[in-house]
Figure (spheres, rainbow over the protein chains, first blue to last red):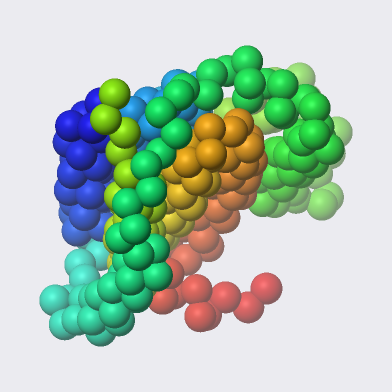
Length: 180
Length: 102
């Protein structure tokens, strides 16, 4: 399990570096999927199989699907890729190297072993619908607000003096709602 | 089973977070900026799960679920904004957003 953790961690880091350095958008997104899969393996080795499954289903499945659909919808490949000049990397990299060194220093290599046991879906479910039930309700409200907000923002602006919509237009509008 | 140490898990989360942060600072494509925010949120969730695994409690995983819900909400609104951005400005360069006036 320990070897699996380190291999998956290395894959995650390499894939994430590739995400931020590729100029081809679709390649970057596919490397992000690889990175999320690697983090799912890390979760599994940490004894969190439920979260590992959710990482694959929700992050790599649903969220990345949303990204890929947005890229296809926007027809981004028709654009010239937005290249980053090499000099633009220097400042952030230096500052971030300092930040990372501080973070690692702050974590401190004290070698606390992790709890060896696995925390299964049943324990997570009991915690979710026991002490955290208010958080679950708030998360559902947040998702509903995001759904309505995304539909409102992405919808085509309405033409004010439009006559009553014919059936064909109403169908087209219903399709548009499904697409969002 | 030889356990992974807490520090290595937290260091992995820190490395992933700063990689996402470098991408956020340097890349100008709006979709890649959103992807970098996803990387950073995922790293924060990883830190929660590692901390939960330290004590053998489910709370870390519960917090990861909340981070997941927030990431999904954020990316839905962010991509909708990207679609409007592209329609009104023709490109996806975040530097163009300084010309947005209502």
